[in-house]
Length: 200
Image (cartoon, rainbow, N blue to C red; front, side):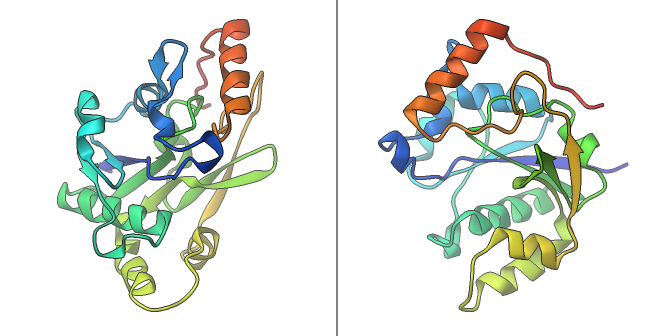
């Protein structure tokens, strides 16, 4: 039986939000991160973030820094997650950005088998993806030499499939990058409640 672990990518600089941690912003009375963790729904979930891990202590999850590849972007966080998941004996790693509060439930099952990423409204989301643990050596080699740190390029290199998801009242892969997008998400929740995206 496949063992799936999950990683919430919470390392963005939130420049368009004025700084801080977007996953800790309040949405409908709860931090966005709490919503993301609930929707992932797996027992083994870590948080990829640099800086003081104590700011995430309330969530009771391991916090993984980028380690030797600090500053190399989301691929560094992905590698930290793959190494952590390998230590658990996992076969695959689900990644979800920490600012996507409406992601569908049952994502890991919907994306299997790895490697695969989600597509909504024709747009591929390479950070909403299921990665084989076996790709970590390839990723480590890529990060160990100068070159582009392009997650789309790496996903293509390992043969990532694309899985289409339906879009209903809102795009389930909407991420919160600006104060305006946060306000729109709050308005959506007020108008429609917490729609239970699931697959199928």
